[in-house]
Image (cartoon, rainbow, N blue to C red):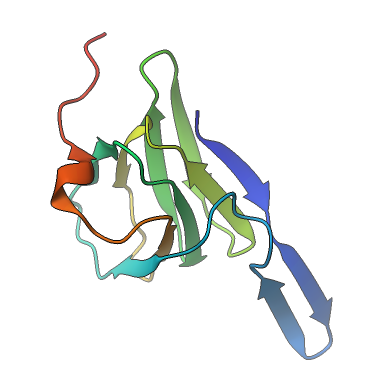
Length: 122
């Protein structure tokens, strides 16, 4: 089931520094980011083995998750909030603000055989 974690952030008069170190439950093998999104729905899949950590480092977006038992909605609107998506979490992303940048850390390299596009039947 998807869950949210807080990333350690150091703040002083100079600004903020957010650290991603020893907090995601996997070794990072791939990083990608999504930006310039129109009103489309992104995602629409789950994985066989890949775990992902999603961070909206600028702006806002919604992530809808369904693990086959429970559906959840997460609003990512702070760069120190990180959403962990387990392989079984079928997810979509939408409501991107015009300035949104969604960065995703992945536990595995891209492999098209790892993707499951069929949503759960509920």
